Length: 242
Image (cartoon, rainbow, N blue to C red; front, side, top):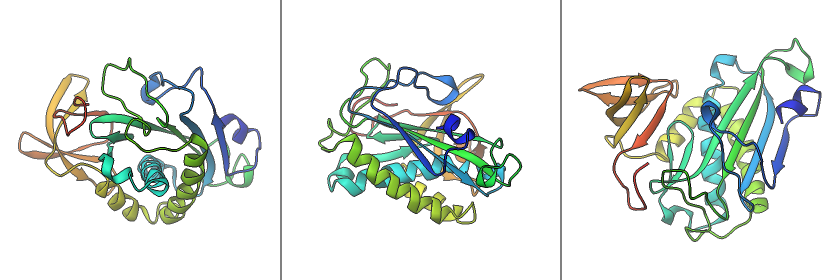
């Protein structure tokens, strides 16, 4: 998607794959891609300042969870939820992930000098199956009783991306994105573990800062976390903690 956009393909542009052989997640991790699941990326141009590009991870997560809700009335009975910064969970088990990449290389209307930035929202959603060798809990929509296909989910996801990108309004409407994300996340005070360069840190989830950064309770104070991995440290009804 990024390559096509940079060579002048009309935007917005969706690129999908039945199977990926070199999928990747955050921080260069491998991403398992199985037949019947959804692998899709949306490339589009934004006129927002580049410093607001990080908000798109939350936007993409909301679009994904709302797409699943749109195709099945069973979605909310599964315990579907979001985990900062970019995971979609059912209970404590991972059902999907999001990777957002941006570049200033292509500006507005395809020019090399136009305002704004090029964004690619990458989605990997477990529709039909899930890998069993992740070393942590994983699940799929089919396993949770939500019957659909990758093509049907993509149609719903495209609609929801259009809707939430419009609501984001080049960053001016980020408050609505943040509020919607918080509604889809865990309860305030939920125990979590932050993975830091010096090792794991016990904390509690305390919502999101106005910027979209994670707020974590650590040793009696609220800290703002802008980067890193978060793990739930207690099971929430399905499988093991994650």
